[in-house]
Length: 265
Length: 316
Image (tube, rainbow over all chains, first blue to last red; front, top):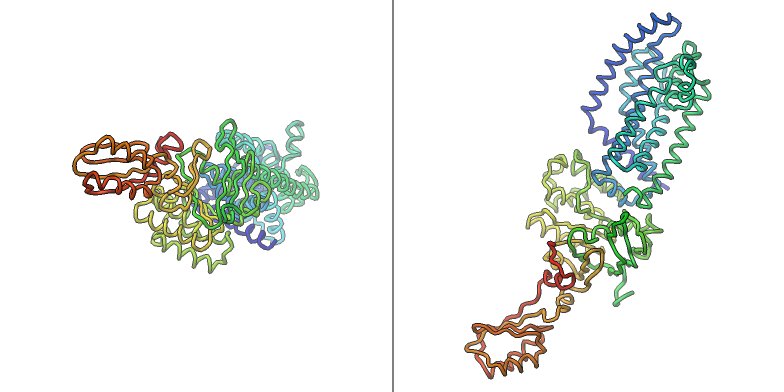
């Protein structure tokens, strides 16, 4: 057990170490995100404000959605990383190490999630700064929920890579998922507006992105944004935890089965 | 137990298929404890597939492989505790540094951070890698990358050390450094398997050699045993003054059990089995008939052995 935890720690270190090599990528992402939330978000909020009046401060709504969107994209990117490891043969090296398959699967998922969270931390801090949200409890709760959400998404993306196995098919699938899941959610559109488009609303109501975005809104703006949420705060929290836990368990079983049976080849 | 030696790895009816492609076809082989075993075969012969299955990277399609009694199919977690492998293609992210790659590897193997640093430095210095420890992996030459891969196993010092073409792309000096390190590993108690498609490497390193071709084991034994299996593989060359009469030639052939005798310009070439045992009788017979100037014996090369067992040259 102690040895398993040591190996789990080393696998997490491996993934965190990997993101440190993307300094330019991170800087570019942070720069672009800053422009998006500092300028374009302000602009679009102004337009929405003029159209719907001052009841909803869309700027608050948008910023937390934008962070959810970037966390989702970065977490999905872990799948690309795994696919890249297939091509470089690193998966064979990993499989030859004295690590139990289950620990390998959990370690890579947790490592990928923590790495994704760290990578998006500057974006979260920018959002919190722009919102003027400095309450430590709220910030801690937001970080914890983002971290848990990322576990679910990384579990999903790595499982997809093991399922698809083809580099091109992975690219297409991830591209479709990224564009569809962000749009079919409450990341940028309030649930109350989506009610006018029933199929859209139903898809959004089972989309994990909706739940994180709305949960973050509830954390920082419980009064102002509560009537725009897709579910009540307790359900939002349970959904995020349930999604992450079930995805982690399913992905671990699936990946373990795939790699032990040589199905990754 | 087999041949009086403990068996470290027992390969039983091992078959590996990738879709419609059969990489290994019913392999049966015992590798003894603490021996250096050479797996000789051309690219695509099934060497790497066999080694990767021993390392539990692949799972047998049929049959099984036992490493110190543990099944790679059913007890892979246990098997991995015994095995370390240096892959044919070095495995590392291109933007990592050798020192990071090897330190992380050492930590996974179970070294504490301080021990990992010490062992990594020792091995890197031994392989003449230390000066390049902080270069990006992508900046290293093919030979240096290969040394980083070999270093992983030398750091690990596993009970079963597998090297897949360990000296490919290395210069002559580096080859000898790696060979010395592999022999040292064996002396310290590791069972070593070396896959190679280079004859001289198989002969320089291995106590026994398995010849694998198109997924099948074609020959097995010590280099000397394999050479002895070629009928008439040894050639006794005798330089004489004058000529050899047909009757003496016929008697010589009968007495030595020669497959063939060539005689041309004072050089007699006698093709026999176990040539070292036939030199003395040949001298005794010929010394009364002709003046012998020089005698030598040529053994078949491993290339000849490979040709004999597979019907193909290694490059084919």
